[in-house]
Amino acid sequence: MGHKEQLLEGAKRCLYEKGYARTTARDVVAASGANLASIGYHYGSKEALLTAAMIEAVGEWTERVLGTLRPERTTPLGRFEETMNQLARAYPEARTMVAANFEALVHLERQPELRARLVQGHALARRALVALVLDVPEEEVTAEQERGLGSLLLTMVPGTMALFLVDPDGVPDGTGLVEGMRVLVGSEAGAAS
Image 1: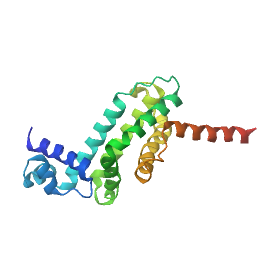
Image 2: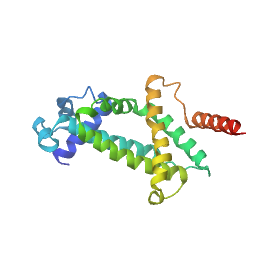
Image 3: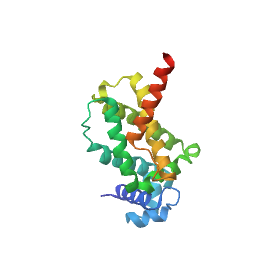
Image 4: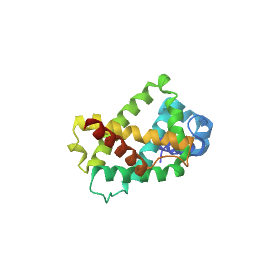
């Protein structure tokens, strides 16, 4: 493994252990075994390195959590419920990384690369979530589904992450979210009659 990869692995460890805002360049160097100058050489700045590490860490965590999910339910709402239940159960194991996501958002205005990477990541996440919930291959997800359903689903993930950080015992899981959706849809049906 070269210095670039060592730095990335060290930065991911720091994100899990210290979070985004409290990680220093020296922390990354200590965790990676690389030298301080290699951060600038390979990534340009500590912030660019942490951005790359954040994107990779979130992707790995999501893949680990959802990659093993094989929803048994046959309806889209059932698959959504299972997916959100699994995510809610996984938040405690990655509390610092979940918090690091929100810490990184504070830096969006000063880091256009971070914003651009998040925009790309969100597009991929919307498509993947729609495919998972509708049980179709990602290439069959339409632009309309990605914009509508994908945006709704993606909004639920950081929303529940934020609720977990504030009140770990009160975070809604998929079952609670589905109950809320049923109330909302039921009240719409009642208003239409």
